[in-house]
Figure 1 (tube, rainbow, N blue to C red):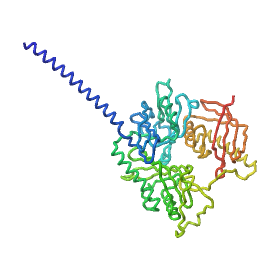
Figure 2 (cartoon, rainbow, N blue to C red; figure 1 turned 90 degrees about the vertical axis):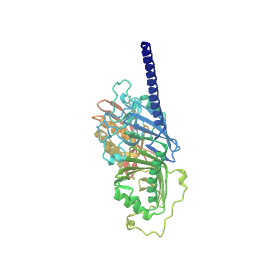
Figure 3 (tube, rainbow, N blue to C red; figure 1 turned 120 degrees about the vertical axis):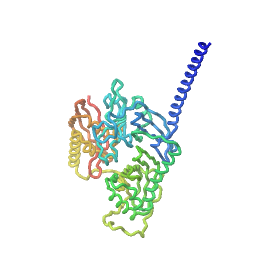
Figure 4 (spheres, rainbow, N blue to C red; figure 1 turned 135 degrees about the vertical axis):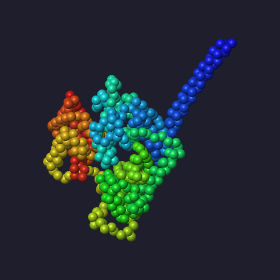
Length: 487
């Protein structure tokens, strides 16, 4: 009897253990699934906004080797696509110098698209150049160029990146289909998720910071404004902290009445100590009316955040603002000490960079020199441009281009990033030009056409190059460029 009962008990114990193991595995799977679903129900804490709808943001998590495409809908970032198996450089950490093979961390923007026909096969379905180094990267002394989001060679087993963000080719194809150019890109060591309560609390904090900046400027409170600015501050005109504050103070005293509007406000966090405000700004005073995108770069110092850089990108004034009345000059305001150095404008003016003013030019015309001098100026310009190309000095080379430059889907920043990346990868460049022809266009610009022979260690081609050149502030600048091969 005992011999019968003992096996029976053991059988029941074994059966119960199997049930317990099954329950444990089921609970474990449930917890994993719950946490996964819960994580994606949480909100991307790295993206906040006010007054934004249907704008996309691309986020890269270097640690997870994942990237996410979100769309801001009614000021909430909604996940619309996720990309795995992302390659983010051969070395860890933030990019500091050229050749360190590290991907940068920060907030960047897609500045163009380079099709696969113009690239080596290692870039797969094409490349989206980013504006690295951005304005604040340069302030920190970071170097390097040619940071792209690109595809991969499907036949290459060992995939690697020297600092770019490498996606699968089908992911690049998807991004091409959604008009990815100009999309903000947040590259972080680790992205952050949060719940609705904490998300809204933090958003209120940052909007209050921006409002403090706005109110101190609008209400001419230079002391309050100066406390928000970092002592190492630089703006788009390379003004230092003291120069910026002095300029603001002068404008506040001379034109206390002003209209300022911040709209389409986006807030990007790369980590807990660096934040970027990106918004459109309308500014109107008796002397000036402007509209453009402003970016404020903040860093944390001790327990306070300070604005370390301000970038301004002028844009056309929207029709909704064109009929707004200008603020009137208050006649009782006393002249400031340096009014003798201020030249009062006699025609309407628009701002083309941060807090600077230039005369509106409805048509840019060439200098009133004779044709011989014009041809000599342009021929000398083209020769210097050719030499800068051969030198592979990106700063010297890009100085020949206008900020309004566009070519093949790339703007000024995209062209700079593309060429800078190529200069890093190519050892030697030879450019030979001949048969130069100069044509003056009706609007005062010039088309300069010539035969170009371009040679590197991996490429040798010959074709017809056309540079469209405009005289800006008395100097030639390239505003367009095209090339076609010669058979």
